Image 1 (spheres, rainbow over the protein chains, first blue to last red):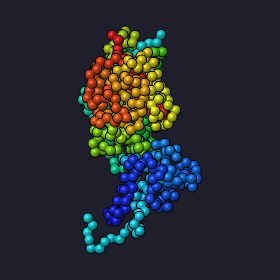
Image 2: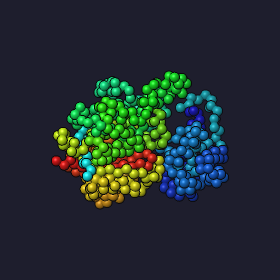
Image 3: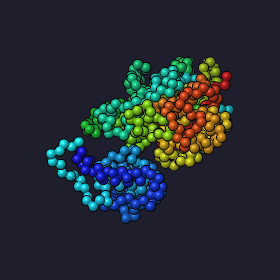
Image 4: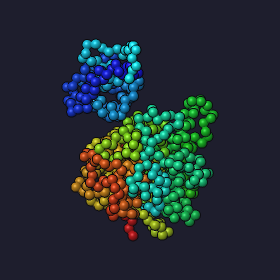
Length: 139
Length: 418
């Protein structure tokens, strides 16, 4: 686990920058704020979960859509949706992380960050489980 | 002509004291009854987002009541029995001198017998031995076990009801007892609120609703902080409160000490959402207005509100919005306190325990503090809130209780006329 975490430090910094966006004033303009390139598998799974919950076609669920204002989810519905997502991705979302999850893209980015799969602007994609370094004790 | 209804006895089991004297002393000192849940044996607390609750410590029912009754019921009903015993003794009512058909019991309970309930359910599903389900499971889990056992303990044969409307249950118990006596169907009603469901499944359920505080697990006494900027959810509590409601004429005839009068009541639904209140506070304002009208008083006459105030981000703000809407410029002149800041949210017991705090305010001229009101949230600051006890001669008190299921209750209490 420690090996995975240390290899993700660059991705984590980028994710923190993204997270800062979530909690900043730019939340008010989150329709304009496009999340960075996402893992298509995760994005599809989340949009499918939303589509099932809302009983509509997943093609109509867009990452720019605001959960409350566009998709009509009240706070209880958001909690139920996130419960399904926790189950789908085997995650636990702490209470304090709920605040930033206001549009579909935020949810996708959050799950990716948690799974260590955020796409970064650097050309090299970090492997999920890098090999152990030789001869050095991990701090 | 409807009878006036007064309160002649009080009894309580709470996270800050068993017995009214201990409870009130602790309440005036702003003592917190919130503590860490050590374990839900066999579940470790790791898997729970919230890890604190308002727990009643060192409770053994056999220390207080006859085992013939105490052993037959689950923890919440044991609390109810103990609180009822204290209240009846406090009232001086002697059942042997009463017509038993004129003494009723009305209990408000939200969750009921969940301690034994969860145990039996778990055992059945794990062991798959239906014949090993305890024969007393059904009587224990049935939601009227408390009202039943109290009637049996005291021979009270009058109207016997259990009201279950979640967090407003025992506010409605007070209101229905008021109606019962007003309409002449009983002289006395042993009015109770009780709940004890800090259990693995129920607690997990509230955690999953994201309704509970999770930021103060390391400082439990700071967790319940209604109206404060840092509030992040309610804290589960357990307990029971009993008020002996009686017709004024009946109380006068037996020269009973009268604490206060129950003067008005309103029961409404927002018809809005199972767990989310209407953010504009319109319906809550309406409920309070109705209760005041039923009591024959105007908003201008209210001088203390025992608020519902659960310490949730939305709920507290809605209640203040409603108070400002109804009371307008007077809103900041009314004393306010949040009993849940001390003991957590006792669910079905909340209305009765808030009622006891209201009665004691009328009787003693003291209003208990609102704990942890350190940094008022501007969205719900009211000048009448205080971290310290307030001394104030109050004559008209409004008690609020709002339940899941879009359910609202308000009760109006007045100073007893001499």
